Length: 276
Image 1 (cartoon, rainbow, N blue to C red):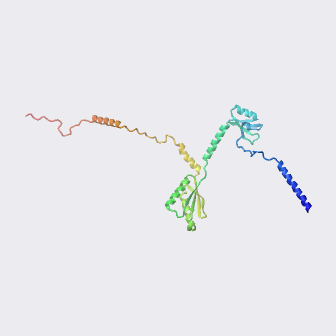
Image 2: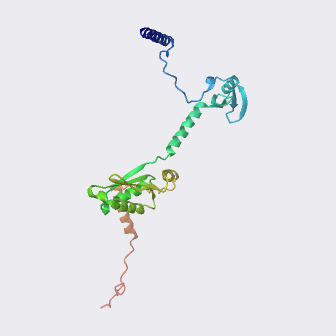
Image 3: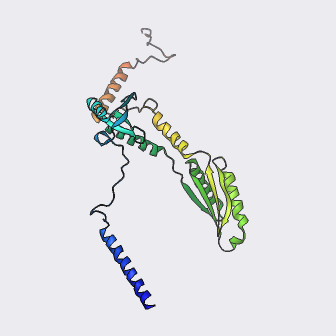
């Protein structure tokens, strides 16, 4: 047994030494080599390393398969860039374009598409089974406002104490609320018990993107001609001008006053009496 154990130990030592030697000889990663960044931008101009490309003109016309040096020469003559638009094709498809302008227009399109995107927002309203009628009207107004804006509404009924033994109170309250707002939304998720709460989700009939579009139409369509014109009031006269205007009015009234006529029935001229 002893010789076999010695042989086994020698074999293990030899295998371990060979493994250490292989690890020492295997080249490790170079210093500072952390992996290259994969670029998503297309290759342009001198970065295109293929011998020939399928060239497309600035207006979209097909030029054909040409050598990459000829394509670069055409791009320089037209003061444009040679952009690789389909690198996986054989040969790759390149187009003559103004790359700076292309990137700017692409950024604008991406910004507009993000602006028009409608993010789904779920608003939450919490009620109690024995809610006051006035409070119920206030909560219903909030639900109607959220649905008009195109948002979903999660209605939660909170049960406490002995109210947990009466879930039908919360169910009837949710059914009442759904009936009150049926013109603006529909029940997307039926009432269900979740622990001490009962939850129902109401979705809007109209999408949020449609609501945004309708809000933007009056802003864009409003013109200056449709707005009511403001009437500018004349400035208030000064004290001296007011006195002068009053004097002129009084003088004009005195000149326009007709002479007084004798009343009817009274003697116009005294008659001469008989001489004595």
